[in-house]
Length: 523
Image (cartoon, rainbow, N blue to C red; front, side, top):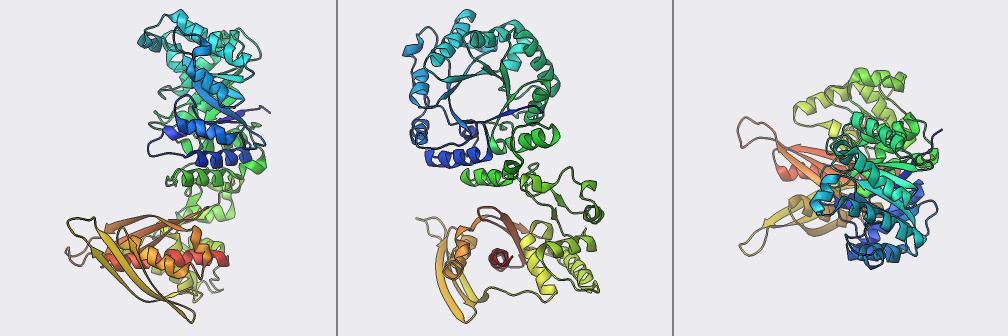
């Protein structure tokens, strides 16, 4: 069984993604989860480039990692100065990290852009590696733009990594920095590099970007060609189109390639890690993300569901539980009784013995979807509907009334106010709240009314809502469909409302989202 070393760059490469920013405190939380996953190396940032990275490494001195080594990232020394005077190299030493990952130029194009002699670039690489090793650090050399450099000038690209090796570096990472190389070239160049090194005992790694949508495929190809270290980010976050996604690479290595990269126990934590990082990054999880996405093991067609119920491998390439995910069956106008029976078992709903309830649910769903509902994207509302149609619905609260007002004047932006009266058993709650719009105001008011009674709602919050005007006979009586997305620490769930009035449709969806969240406690 081949050993593959996992090197995570989420806390540096991932932060280069648009709209992603981690505070030093956030980075500590993520690092601890990565360590718990069994990741071997965690790159904490570039201490020579920004105060936030310096602060993180100061905090990290008190962090107790059980599995991972913490790495600081930086560049080789600047041209024509000594290593001891280079501020970037000194920052790596002062960070307190015991691993230094430095990048240098392997593409002669970049050396020309820097307007320095080729020999000086090679000296910059060798001098930097040797200086860091002399100070007791483990050194990893990232050969930036290596594949482009190899295709343009093979001899110089090889010379650049041999400069690091001859200075004592034992780990060389080949980088597809522009993300434009295809798998066939990745395999050919990786094999050519292994043959051209002329050194034994070198650990070769791969670092790929996703500009052609090939980052995962390129990484796997490089592993097949002989690399032993894989670099990537959780959820593929990163600059431009992102980096190689570790949430895909790890299960491919473990399940498809029989690689000793992570334990089976830790593999089951993968989906939770993906969701945790997306929450910290304030990014909505991608439903279609392989292995860990909400839709990764979702089935909609009735024929598919019927087959999966008998033999899951008929339409699934693996058991979803291995990565902490679960099988989902969707219900829509395309569904049959197999879908309903599966969902009923999953949700603990009794359909009875004669099958009439199942037929009634299928018929009702098809009628409602004709009217504008879409239950395959609103599982929370589906559960409530099925419970109502089988006389098993027990609401946790009932609406007495609500009022929503919207204010706007020329000096201030638009604001909304909601007052709501609900009943929980014999208790009546009347609350008011503000929001950025009517949906936000209603959500805040309902949460305020319920949280004292149901404290588990504290970790649930509104993520997004989508409004679509459905086709009507004219513009005044068109129906409006509102889909609400809410999430807690582990799950995102959607609910739906349809009405001729947007506020009424929003209330239907919001009420269902709270009822559904509270029903999860019962389960």
